[in-house]
Image 1: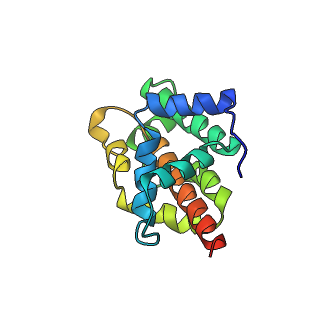
Image 2: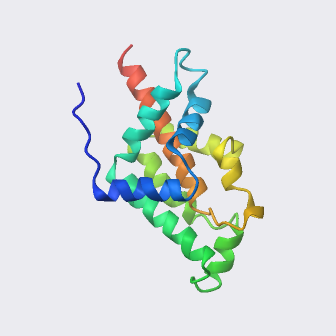
Length: 166
């Protein structure tokens, strides 16, 4: 039996910033469902949401969320100096620091997360499609990768738990 989880101030802030940037945890749970539905026939969105919640409860995940979102916000406010500002505004393909930050989340639950992350990063389903829409004027250079990484980590967590119950 798992003990009751108490949210730290850091976790509360990470959750708050996700919501402020237009990402609900259910959006991430839908990505987990997208990744795992064919492997778990009885999978529910509630199962997926539970695993997203557990991933977000990790301090290193919270740190990545706050760092990435802050960089996106500073980019929107144009307080980052060029040429980095130009790179972040365009979300240039050869700028990989956003993916590197996301991989710190993926690593929390093992190597299966890498394949989940790579797949969802290419497919861009659900909330990821909206976060990658450059016509909104918002910068989500880091957020889209963080959301994909949280979904990939939650998928990995779910797969590890299912494997241990066989």
